[in-house]
Image (tube, rainbow, N blue to C red):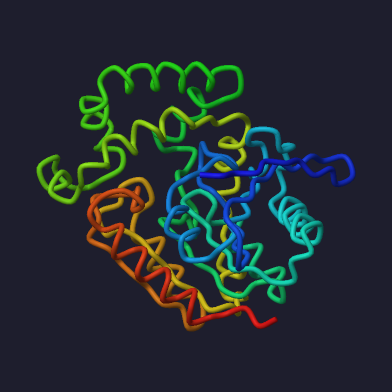
Length: 287
């Protein structure tokens, strides 16, 4: 996949971003532990004629750490201005959900449509949760590099075992039920994901931002919205999709019987791609 990676200086802040493909502009807000080198879902979108612009969100990779989400969204707006893009489709995945929600609520005139994929839309992982406390330890700066290095090495040596051991954190299904929803590419896609992931300071910022209430922002979204989620998602429960559907006017929900949180791998990707393509085609950007 041909990917152009650049940085943009905006005042005291640096924003790293990538561009893949050519055509209709699509602004992609990646999930946690990712950056502008994300790949999930890209092949279908590029083949369908979209140019995917992916900023490394606040604190990830070479992008400056900005704790306030409103300020970070202003940085992403500067990217559209820099690229002379008047309006773009927006896709926000997983922990990128709050960014997509606030960006679309704040800069409605720059948004042609919004798609939320496995996205956080309401308070997630309370500081009292065991997962929150563990994540704060293993994904903090100075530690996260070694966490991901160890996981990648184990995953490269034992890809099937690693997937099976981590399956519980992504899916509410039993292993047999989950495997029935996977295809021959899923294990390798999962391995590649673990090799490219890093948390930097970004995931700690995500944890903080995911404590906020985005109800007002959800109600302010005017763009046509598609909400895509697996009913078997353990990482970000389906209630997040239900909440967004209830609070965004005219939102359309697509609840998949996919194996778990990573709806971009498995047998249901063809269904996801068809639905995404049809939705985007329905809401063309008028020149």
